[in-house]
Amino acid sequence: MSDRSFGSELPSIEVRPPGPASRALARRLAAVESRNVTYADDAWPVFWESARGANVRDADGNLYLDLTGAFGVALLGHGHPAVREAVRSQAEALVHGMGDVHPPAVKVRLMERLRDAMPWKGARTVLSTTGSEAVETALKTAALATGRTGVLAFQGAYHGLTLGSLAVTDRPLFRAPFSPRLYPGVAFAPFPDPTRDGAGAATGSLEAVHAALERGAPNGDPIGAVIVEPVQGRAGARVAPDGFMSRLSSLARGAGALVIADEVFTGLGRCGAMLASERVGLTPDLVCLGKALGGGIPISACIGRGPVMDAWPESGGEAIHTSTFLGHPLGCAAALAVLDTVESEGVAGRAKRLGGTLVASLRRSLSGLRCVRDVRGLGLMIGIELGEDDDRTPRAGAAARVARAALEEGVLVLPAGEHGHVVELTPPVELSEEQLAFGVRTLARAVREAA
Image (cartoon, rainbow, N blue to C red; front, side):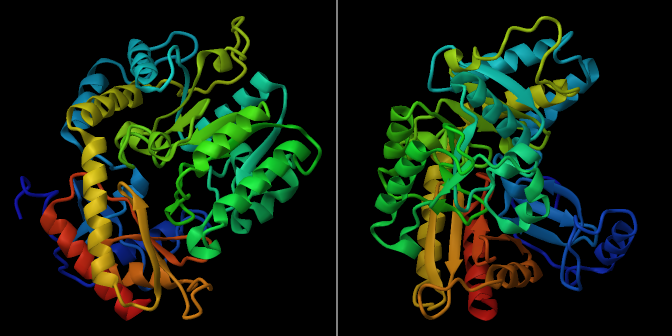
């Protein structure tokens, strides 16, 4: 394999993963990292050394096909040339600025581009580093703009693990240890799941939304924000029925609540449009972006309609919501390169077409397998849901077994869903036809053998 083809290659496994180098690194890591962070056993993980396009090379020299996009970050492919060049050029000029005191000039250019990419005129932005921070900003903005601190979120939602974002994240594993510190003014409505709940899923969910907006949060606080993922990510690429998001937007507006679209995972073309909200009919007041925004460099953004963002008081010399690395020059330069590339390379259209092909190929290859309850997705956010023979019970842990089996053959996927029963694919848009076909064959075999 030449360096020139690295990125478009099929997997090549030289030593059964995890190899000796990855195992040695796992032992070293366990000695210095909190034991809660990185899971390791005899079959997991491999340690990455380099990546390009849709390929990853590990510390043992094994070459993988990455269908995770590194948690969706590498939408454009790992190490996209435009991003690397933007970061290199910016690093030669300015590595760090003073974001809310003496800002870097590149910060202004990025925020102008973000304004122009949004569905409203006069959008304003608060930059940060992680998706969780963008969600925190959105929740604070909604409280300031409406005067109501209550929030409506959805079952299955993942919005981050900082305290504010964790309060609107729905998974006991994450919440339970910190529940006494979480804001109690969050109501959770069912996210409509036709696979689980049938044709009436949307109606039941909207009735629950309407009731919560009228009743308020569990602690009695009136609800000022509805936060939703246009497609639920860590819940397993769950797509609501047609019309649901439009009705949700109308219900929120009718109740005087703002709609926050958490597009950290779904935005920037992954789901077939600049914002997935466009495809599902959601009309947000605030949008959170992250992951793919920096092309691998940490940066996120909360962007809102001008009148909503103007609820923040004018700075009198001390910002009430800021951070040291706000508007970091390298992140801003990378994000500008990403936005340029998304536009110039037609990423949204490519993701829509490639995602459709991938879903259709997976459905053909997995047809007839009793354990496969659903193959779904929007653009390049795709889930394979695995269930027991009763057609209702999730096959707990099955997706992790599939991920391990696929890893041995050189394909990287991740388990998702509360029960670890959904194989999730969020690959780069650079995926070639040959790589796609190899990935589908490998996953079909892994599901048959391991699920």
